[in-house]
Image (tube, rainbow, N blue to C red; front, side, top):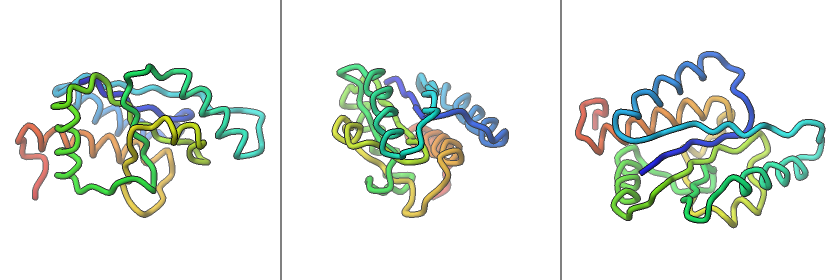
Length: 155
């Protein structure tokens, strides 16, 4: 199964960029993973317009059989072990490509919610969309170590 992590806008925090690249490198030992950075919208001031234009970019990049999972506060909360089981289940279902989508500063447009196959919440707390890139990459790596019975995760 191929995994892609998509997000809106460039990373401007050096420590988060170094961190998620390190976890992506580690995940490569288990599966194909890549990052897709979708350019943010410039010149718009209304959040609704920004979300709508971001949605058009996102939906335009998706293929019909892409399994889209939104990282969203209204999604399912998993423990790390539960997330690993969820990921393993998707692999067992022969999902070819999972796309985990991290939204921009204003979240997702309704069009993106309608297209999504699932939603996952990493916490009830709100994190910056910059920092969540690193946090999610670490959790994805943790999930693969759990699936592969490696000692990274201590229960």
